[in-house]
Image (cartoon, rainbow, N blue to C red):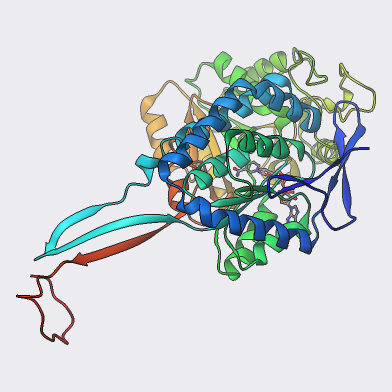
Length: 497
Ligand code: NAD
């Protein structure tokens, strides 16, 4: 059986420990490989290599760094099918969805190709007589990225193109559930001409994460994952003096007002609820049917849901399996709970017939109606293909529901009323909002991130906030005095004139 290794100093590195984890193909249920789990010594080796390489990389000209990022973009664009196939084999998502993930990540690489412009500082001549001031931004050094299973290529790409273009060295700790995409991207960086050590992959679990959080030579951590771990990473990393951005879980509501086009709203709910088997932090998991829309909307959602083909993501299906058997069983447990707690089970995904191997981690799309805010299918992030419909009498009631929720990642409103949409944009306590757009993932030149328990720290991912996160500022005040006329002691605090 193949063991997926770390990537340190520009080559595969088996690691010093003997702990490994199983990597499965979710469509067959088979163990396809094992992945090395880093020991504390491996963390030290990875960070030491990154630190050494990062010193030279930070001194490399901005033009030369940009050329490497540009070559990485060209290679990625021409070989994205390979990466998509790796994602499908370990994550399970269907090929078109995996390709979409790579493309959205590539947009951040393209944004990072503009780093010379993004790193420009300010300059104020003659702020006082003969005195000029300028600001510059410099890389941090070694930065850690800790990513979740659900986007093994895109989420790391939210961060590393900008971090690397800005002159940092990156240590990526991917999810142990789908670790191969990270190694593929490391090889691509090498082919693009990135010096060895500037991009490192450290495989593993909590030992690797804690090692990075505590390491004195790691300056910053970008984390994406579930809320309890995001909070933990934020606290522990901050306590160790690091800059930390930690993106957490979600429970995204889609409000449907009575004046919405219900066919378009139903299309959107099904696509955003069941795409990637609901394993997206921007998935819609709650539809809030306002006024008298409920019965018609649920019929339309159910009708469309019944047409979905479930099966092996490498075939031409609509929805693949869940990532692991443990996760599949956990999500099925929520379907049991929803039934027990009294929600109306309109479509039961436990009865799925999938086009794939018998041992695949299958669970079909599940639809609940008449869900109430106290039920566990409403309160918890399920992270699977389970869509809940909640009924609300008024827009105000729908808004209150969202604002009372502990998460604030994404939300959407479906309406033909511009005034209502505008009010929603202003009043909803959520970071990313769609108006007739169910999954409002910002473009790379804007920043991605939620509010409340969906993000710890104050900086969102990519866009100019990303550039800010991976650099720190200096302000330089300059005077070139003429020794013939200047000089003399002045002990008072300097004033400008
Ligand atoms: P997870 O929190 O289990 O794991 C994320 C990372 O943390 C992995 O690399 C994992 O190895 C590590 N980790 C897990 N347990 C740890 C522990 N006890 N100590 C230290 N490190 C630990 O998340 P997941 O299941 O891989 O991903 C799904 C979650 O990620 C969902 O909650 C989803 O909403 C969230 N997510 C959020 C966003 C966002 O932008 N807000 C994007 C994608 C995914």
